[in-house]
Length: 511
Ligand SMILES: Cc1cc2nc3c(=O)[nH]c(=O)nc-3n(C[C@H](O)[C@H](O)[C@H](O)COP(=O)(O)O)c2cc1C
Image (cartoon, rainbow, N blue to C red; front, side, top):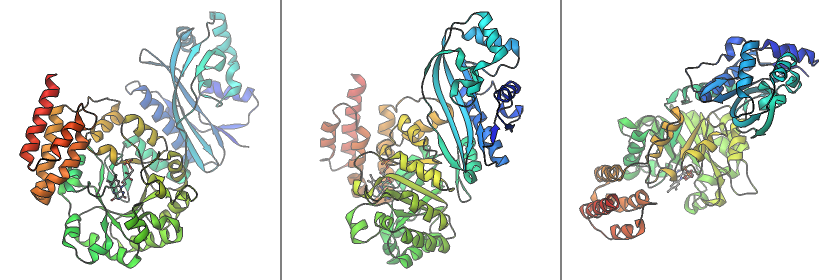
């Protein structure tokens, strides 16, 4: 088997030779320089990505070994000692102490580039100066090159190791450049349309109208997806439906979603949107589980049962559209028919520019947990961007979904009463900032804004009815929320709602 060393270290080269390996080196020194102006995590990511890129550019069909190990103490980066003295001083300093170790690696295996970055903790042995010198001279640990994260600093130096690899994603070779672009710019592309960050508002019928979408956009959603519209209703020129295809200038980029089962009708609806709607992207709904759509109309998630139909529908809409087409799927019809990978390949083959995968089956509706493993399998199976979806409600869940290697994450229920989630996640993924929760004043102001915007869109009566649900969501988790909710649901004017809410928040603030 051919071995490639993705590391420029002359010492590693020497030791690999000593260990009797036949190998090639493909990473230049400049590919792995630590930039002290960047955070440690950013450095690890950059180095792993550079390695992945080099591996990719070389396009070798071989096993690549290479890891970066960086030890962090008091926010100073250690590791990668350049010379003997440097190595000695670093090791002496780390002697008998516990430190955070961050690793990044790029491995090419068969047709996949695998990236990981991982934090773990090591406690160093208490070695004498002679022992450190002996280590530097012999590098006895090196026989384990690439075998685990701590090898770069020498497993023989380590007394205790805590942690295991995670966040390993096998990416199809062809999509590595795209992934590198996404990770380094924190954006992604659907066709030619650049989505300014990797957070998407998932489509929600009855929720994702212009008022809510604008709020989410202003809070930082990179892409907003409109609630689904029926292809037939577009065909019948239903006034309410046609109005739903209108978009506000500040919403770009925005996706309009259509649902249906009949190819001709879907094609006509797509053509209508291309001609009369300013939406940037057209999405086909293949995930809706409700009986009226999935059973009666054989649309939504019903299509998932027939991958050939998935292909035909997607291909016809792609061919008829001047805008990029995407498809939103569930992982399958039920637990015995999980076919997301097969459907995703069909969707890609048919020319769609991205796929959103909700990690549940149709029969789960919204119960149970979204299966991120299947989402990861889809990411690894196709070259077009995959938007992961399901159960993102905070930073931890968002990070977990990103570990699938998906290009972006779509947030549905986690944004209900919490459009602030986009601001929170952007701050965290941009530079690790954890923002404070919105103040009661901001929540109240947001409710008022959404109501006023809904009045303009739908009139006072419907706005009041819709705001009952939204207000309930905004209050979720606050003290006595259900009591206030019951009062609000009986009120017949927004002025009364406002008075009740103002009193409620005042009381909370004065407690
Ligand atoms: C009230 C509601 C309405 C929804 N409407 C749509 C829809 O119109 N089109 C669609 O593709 N998915 C729809 N979904 C599914 C969501 O887009 C998303 O896939 C699902 O809620 C899982 O994501 P989450 O856990 O972030 O909510 C809807 C979900 C909810 C809760």
